[in-house]
Image 1 (cartoon, one colour):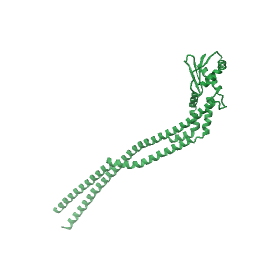
Image 2: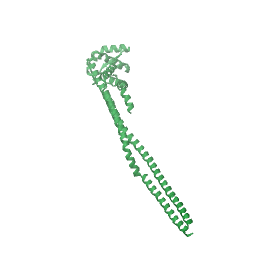
Image 3: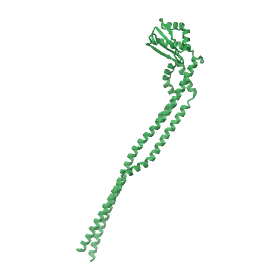
Length: 98
Length: 217
């Protein structure tokens, strides 16, 4: 029947358009995906997150320095009498005569 | 148009609409999947690079800090060793000058000669000392010779050299040919004993510090 044929033709045309639209959606998505995976974006993200990593490392470095300073303070606070005692012991060894 | 035709057309349009929205829905789903997958891959890549870079940076910065701290600690420990060495040297000088009654320097000197002569194991020996000690030895040479001969149970020729050495005290003993030399100066003894004591000093003075350093390094 001519009416049905005309309607079918119209529908086929609209279906073709829908398929084109669908292809366009996929195309756009692929383009967006390429952008997401672009070196520039990845590098930017790395840089951004590296800041907090660097802060974390710097905190650890500071902790090492603090502990180092604590050790040096301990060394400098070694009691004089402990040193003198050792000197006395070594002196006896230097002048040891059997 | 007849009513029946309208129904058929409506049916066809309805089916078309369903098909159309299915095509678009599938496309949208596929698009979402592509984006989600890209985000996931990007995240993996970012994390991979970040981990590598952070690890490298950590190694570099922590390594540098540890090295600096270690050097400072070694320097501080060395200063303690230097203090011990300086104090010891001062005390040795006091003994030599007779300002420390706990030790008899002359007896020590005779012992150093005895030890050296035994080590050289020769009959003709020459003793080198600083001017002060050499004069003292020359003055007592015959009694020193007797003592040595008695101890070694054999005759000896003992000479105190006129070539003086510059040192705090102690002696250098050699045979006449100069092929055998025994260094028994106070400086030499001090260095040798200090070296021997390094482990003990480390244990006595720095055991707590060494424990702390183990935790740090």
